[in-house]
Length: 247
Image 1: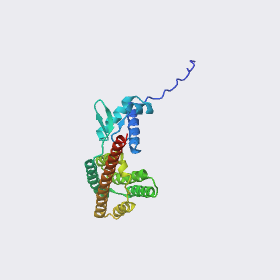
Image 2: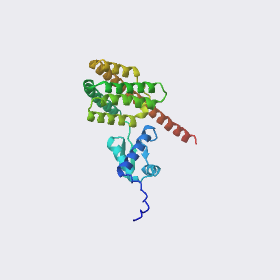
Image 3: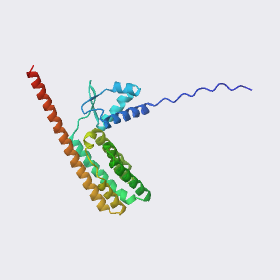
Image 4: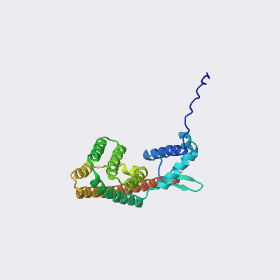
């Protein structure tokens, strides 16, 4: 009888290019979310590749993905940079968000069952718990999850993908300004109560007014931050001129 040979060691499967690109993409999104990359700052992909222990190729692919999404820009012979803030873009994003959410709301009201209602209630409670903390990012995330849960119950996959992309752009590119917002639990609760009561007009009106107010508040915050930034830049220029003239 032939003796069994020594079992061969099982080698771990190599990660595919797609897995490595996803890893780089997730790392870049995390950097954006935690303000580790400033607007206009060059993204040093070689350093990031070394940090992630991957080759530069998946990092470059991830950056191209972000460029396609409008989060970064590529300048020939210079590299990738975090895209500048645009008031016009923010306004357009919120207009699209409102159109998508209100369209999906109609489908949600027609399809909602007890299981879906339980999911929405759990999302609302998670948002309430977040508002009782001091963590602005957590509040924004739970706010986003409530709106995405409401949209997902519509069964409209395409609309949900569009809405997710809009949130990605807003929360990754404009997160510094959005952190100053104070999402209202009472408004979300009113939308939920209208849905429970099958009051479509009430839910639509409340959601529409909520999104309009958020749009106005975000645009006002961005304008204020841009004005403060310009003032600080002018002050620095003046200090440099005064410092140079006294030498």
